[in-house]
Image (cartoon, rainbow, N blue to C red; front, side):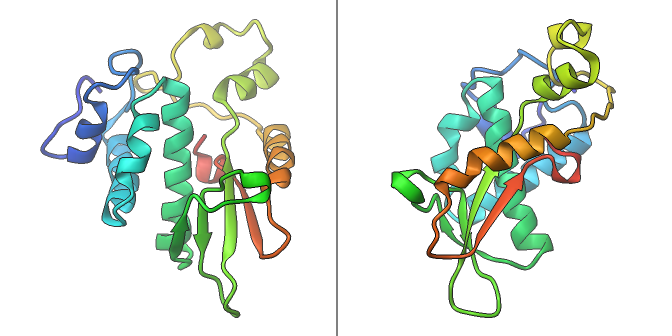
Length: 182
């Protein structure tokens, strides 16, 4: 995709302004991805929370991708699973921050959500080796589709999440590799 259409993807266009990653890769690689990202940004914007994400969304490519995965999971939990987000960046163990508090039923206690995003480079290295030529190229390439077996990355991400999770409420540890997103 050559440029982000401000008429079709106004929030994504806004995020791109002044972003460190602008022009560094083919993000978003196609209109469908731009549409999906626009949906995730609308989720945060409609909740009045997009501003808190802008510095990370405009940061380096890796930070942009991690932040988009956090928004994707929140949108998925609310729009698809019916668990409304009732708190943003809740405090976990030791003052660490999670991504969301979501309403769950039955019971009055919310669930604490922590999202981990294993990097695509790690998945490629495990699937193709550290010397894979793909690791020398940007993450987003026009018309490229590939899959990996991310089980080890998911397990590692969940293990990293445990120290943040409070014992005082239900928790959801999510890896952003769900639905093929990473």
